Length: 453
Figure 1 (spheres, rainbow, N blue to C red):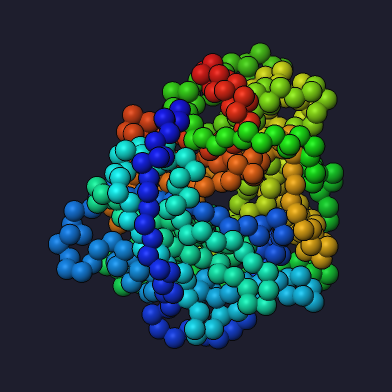
Figure 2 (cartoon, rainbow, N blue to C red):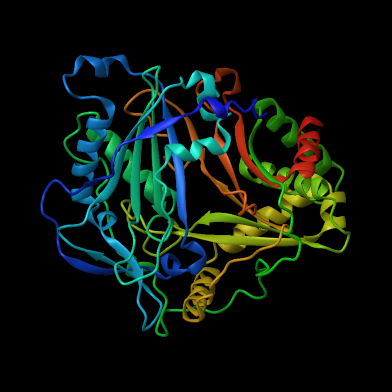
């Protein structure tokens, strides 16, 4: 479970912003983005912190403190990923995104120091909202100049450990894409001369137009509701909760036992994602104490990288995810056996990976780009679950990576994230952490549901 809040001890002093440019000249071009990239609901700034324990070997390198090493590695990385040094804006004529790349552009880079130790903050697990001091603070702005799709802040702590705070536009990279960029930067900081994966733009591969090869609709699909009525609460809290490997095994055993008493002959092979999605969705519904007929929605962020023909190239770093969605009435979800909920989730994943469904979703997004909604409001009845355990962000080739903290505002309670466990807690090996946002009273009830395991 989340630890006690020690955020008052975190005081950060920041340097002036430096603009880090690609090490070598790059093209002056204007780039178009894919249909998924253009989704107005994707146009948010994601803020993430990677926590690194002290690395004594760095002290032996003259004038090469971690911030300097990473600044140099960032410059070298931007030679390969020069679009991330550009400026992003929407064109007035068709509301589509455009990335303008010019020689004078670069990525904002901040050096910072903190007077406390990482241990005093439980490697940021107990930093709370004070952790926002560890990421670049900026938001997209409208106007012809556009905004930066990427920014970094390197903060050194009193113990010698550091945090790498990233702010990136989800419109340009999904989780896998930004992890690919991050891995390249860490590889080059570690002494490699070139990336292990060369980036590929190819955004036209996921671009819908009237001449796209649509192969028919899959039928009626469940879509997340666009407006909700129960998001008026102002007491939202965000925590990162832990589920042990033993608890995961108990959940899988429960499904197996429930399965044995059904009349179906097919035995399900249940993944950790499926069992946790089912358990968390049902527990969340019970904790919120919804009216029996309220419609509860779950959307799973599902990668489509492998189902395209031909498959997207290895170095593709644009958005390649779509939501697979399912709905149940609150009473039905709350009272359903775990087995039934898992079965629904498996069916949802299967449908979302059908090529016809993919093109249908691209068509829907293309329509959303044209109307360009000014706000994105989804009620507390709905949630989106994203799995960050395998996207590659936890690559620690540089050594010392102990934790990953996504900073999801409490104003966006629909986003829940599965995270790898902190390496600072070896007894949790094989477990999963869940980033949870709920009203304060519901959070206490949700924890009771987890403890019931």
